[in-house]
Length: 206
Image 1: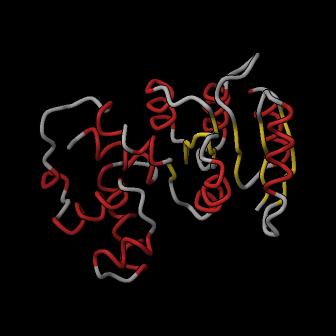
Image 2: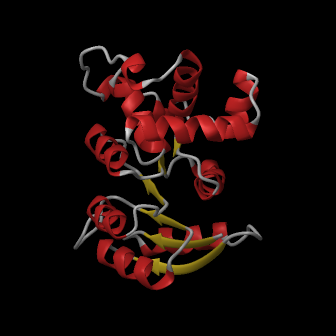
């Protein structure tokens, strides 16, 4: 896994590099200190995962991520920050970031990177528990009008809980292939891009 780290605290960035490269399957291919670095490093290096802080000088991580995702909608961006502000979390979710974890969750950084690299969406426990409360409530959404059945709704709920395909398969007694097919069909029916958007969609329409 090729990773770029962007953090305005040089000591933090170097420390993260040391920690990550203790893992055989992770190689840090670039370090940056602000959002403009993130954009240029992403264009040059094409990392598997971009691990980035949010509050930085010159250009914030959120603004940089927005520009990167416009260039490459498949970019895997994991925010690592000391801030759990609702405004940041909402913006990160809506733009399509693959994860948002706090620096305090030190032991969770490597597992989160591996999960994002594997196609999962990751939010630390203290972030995930906030999501339902700050999503705007809307009129009840009728899944039936979009051809979404009961089993598909169970898959949607499982995705929103952050479960992997393997975990959903075990939960619903499906094969992983069936889960992948369900997720693909659901995204197409609801005109959504990825699992992150599906999770946001679920909480906004509960």
